[in-house]
Amino acid sequence: MSKENAVCLAGLSIPMLVGSIIYLTCGGTTVIYRWFTEMGVSLKTVDYPQFVRNYGCDLLWGYALYSGLRLVEDKTAPVSKSLLIAMVTLIFLEGIQLFDIVPGVFDPLDILVETIAVLSAMFITTTIGRNVYEKAG
Image 1 (cartoon, rainbow, N blue to C red):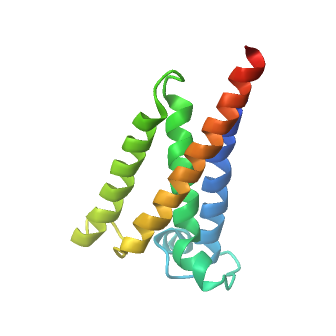
Image 2 (cartoon, rainbow, N blue to C red):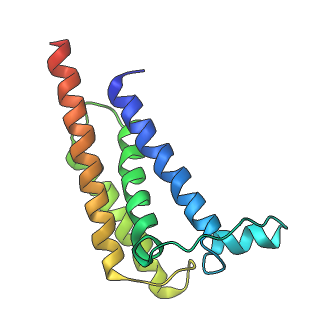
């Protein structure tokens, strides 16, 4: 596995795991928490700081989204393609919350936070990818 793929895999799996743990332990305000408690699974709740409750998972999901896209895309594809797909996806997923299609509350700041996460993931994977290619060449 290339270093860039390893970074993208870590950038996908670690934020998804941490975000899931936050959702499962932050209490009854999340859909995931309610699903698990309805199945009889209960976890100790954690009183996270308000920023983590409101935006922490959005940061993690945005980072994971871009990393996952880069993992499955052709490595010769321009990063702008992954960026465009990620931005359209996150705006779409936030936007449909306005219509009660998916659970959640529309918050324009979520889009900003997720955009910061996507751009961070793009910068990190691009920098690592550039370093890999420079060392190989």
